[in-house]
Image (cartoon, rainbow, N blue to C red; front, side, top):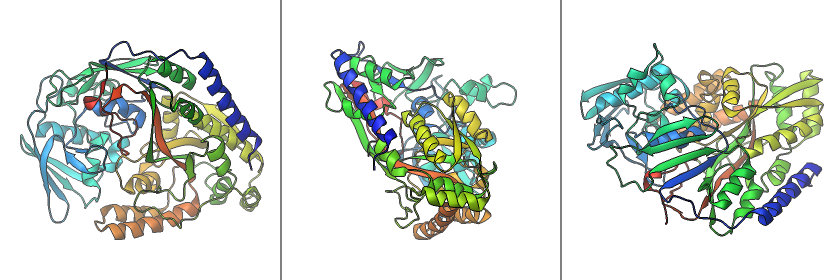
Length: 519
């Protein structure tokens, strides 16, 4: 049954669509066919590949670097990039890569084995965001200038795929000239790039725009774009308006109702692709009373999942069933799924001995759905006697709070860097990864740690699946997160943008080197 807030959300979206249809002038061609303009809702938080784990940041950082291997086009298959070939030992603990020629940093220095070793040693020493995927590395050794060897502490099933992620980016060792004390140049690389990728950051005016220019020593495919201009446009309606006018070529984070209105508009196409992209809520398991499993279960039963999907996502999403999304091996079609049951939620709060509960909800406006979800959450939890205060922060501030645990409930999106349940089960639930590295619920269960760590080192996929599904049963029961929905990856672009290839592992990452704009 449609609730009052659902009708308001739908009617408000339709009204806004109608206003735009009357007010927006005919689309105009972008002024410069060699400049690609992207409209984003907020700044990247950090563009150091050894630090950031956000897709929003990877729009700028990923094309600035190369990696040993890459995802092959729109698939999850692995193909050579800097490495031309590789071998591994029978026990899967030693991996040796042979590097190719023609890969050059923006300062003219060639990419060699020393640069590879430097990059991984640096990332491991920093031990932030992406480190969780590389903890198995025991040593990286230079065999010769064109050969590098990785030794793992134990087998790590998705190791090769991790090398195609942002954390596997190869950084120019000359960055150490920019280091401040023992920060390993984190201060510099937070807003600069020093890679061998096709485009490097030229300038960044926070809150306004980030500009990228071609690597002068790029020897890959000929670059059609002379500049990538990433504009920060906080309001979704303004991003849509600029897209329709032709002032931007790609607009991200457009609400579902506005995307629907854009479909079929002259000069615009909407990218709408199946994905493993999920939206969920972090419950801070270390803060009373959320440290009580009955309270967390109560909150999971208090949520009107169908109302959120129908009212906010306009039916274009599916409620999650377990932490591993549909379409990824390891997903369990029989996993327990919470349903909207306020009476049961009240009973669980009573069993927990909790009353007069007040919680804060942390979010940013980078995702237009997060605020609407907060309003629904506020209403749903009020129905079981729980007060919710909405706290809106700039995205970088929100992420700082997530990292330190300064929240009760927080909104989150997640998409995997590679097609393996490790990206959900190990990142979300390993107690060694609390905070931004992945376990944003600050959850801890020794049995779950044991199961998921064993699954990561097991090389037999069927056995890994068994271990992950056993762990899933536990975490669904203990409800460290509220699992909301899985959705398609959607954004809008001008139809003269050519060459974009969607890869479900590279959400918000564009293959700029292959892209162009038709004159």
